[in-house]
Image 1 (cartoon, rainbow, N blue to C red):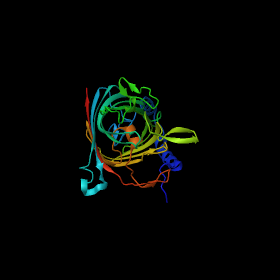
Image 2: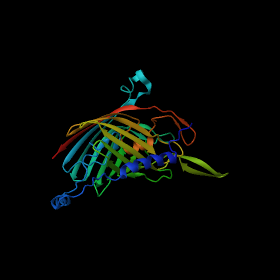
Image 3: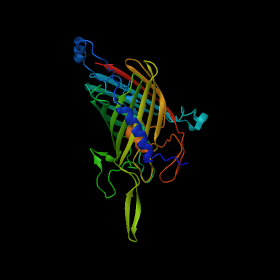
Image 4: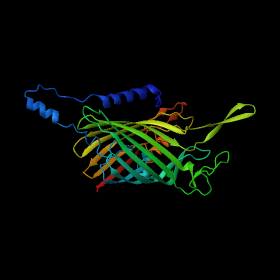
Length: 351
């Protein structure tokens, strides 16, 4: 039996199931009023928005709907070891080439935060080749805004927007990766920087705290890359047409969940599914699961994942590590089981 990860029916069923979880009505307790005084008290009671849908702005490789309160400064350290497929040879990925990101963000007012980050290794479209890992540093700038917060009787879910812009600053004096001109000789630079280096990410985060233990989230996303390779298609005996081997725009959807074991310990789950079908170089989905430990100002997450690049658009566009074996749309067999170990450390200060 061939597993098709881009099969529309499978994705539709998974999305529908999570949407039911998100939109199921709140449980309400109905009781007969015994006195007028009791009724008055219930009318005056103010219903407050749900708190702590998640304990961190991160859930493994994805953002959550959470936005820190006004005046919060956050620092992130994210680390990914190599894939474990070589076993003892590189000690299950611990001694393989690793990736790291340092990030910082600040909430100047409630419901909004912005941040920057720098990543050691990223992915890029190599001219005339498949997308590959390249050195950075990759700098990113991000922003998040909480649109609505789950409130009983008013909003069944919390919704936030997250955006990310990234530019790779890797020196490339001979333009072996990043061009200064396009195929017709026109300049492709902005402020002296090749626009081939730019990538963009937009995501809508929709989450629901089901009860004190379980929270779920679905997050459709849109990634954009500024450059792709092409190939020639013969139109007739005297004309050729150039077609892109990948789409410039890429759609995906992420499913996430957190289950609290204790007040400070939780289980985490993520599944990231590509939606856009490319002619070549289709990215793999990512399956991740792990554990989270929290204090009032710290969060530590330890997990298994397939994503290596530590930037959302780069992960969604160029992920080569598949969680399971499957057959792609071109009937190519993809090898699975390419997991790696990672961790996130978050520290908060409030001023």
